[in-house]
Image (cartoon, rainbow, N blue to C red):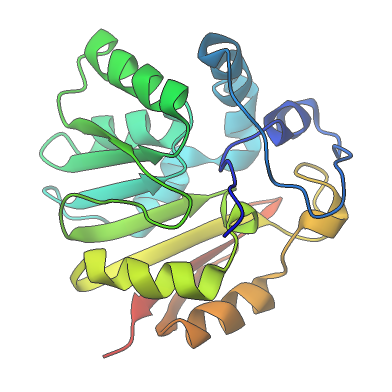
Length: 217
């Protein structure tokens, strides 16, 4: 399986409101300055179209939920989840070691004792517990061999757990180059093949689809 980096230089385009040109089929990007990326990924202007609080509210999580933020980057969603679920546990997952170290430091700096940074691999999230929710924001299109990946991920889901996927619509103004985008129907088809069923679909995000799945019995 070809290596990928979940949160990449597309962040510059996301916050600038333009489409970033990348080599066709390339999802391989490195991170060597987490503080710089934090200024990009956590820019307050992102909130206007990412609507993080509305997303978390729509998920209607139980107060003690275990949540995995897959491809957490600098913790844009992880920190918000931790603050909105003080009795829960947020597993901030990334494959980039510098991002994982940044997540640990951010959790200490902001007093987020319920955030656990997790070092993953391209083909395995290495979740240390059974999750009630796995959140995949602006990341799905970076994952290779997705059917196999999400089949394996089911082993880390608690009974009744959900998988939430948020990614860019083909016509979105933000996001990666159009050739790198994955349509919502493709996500539905791939996850059906991986053993998931669509449970909900939210339409309030202006640039992205928001799909929620449950594992089939």
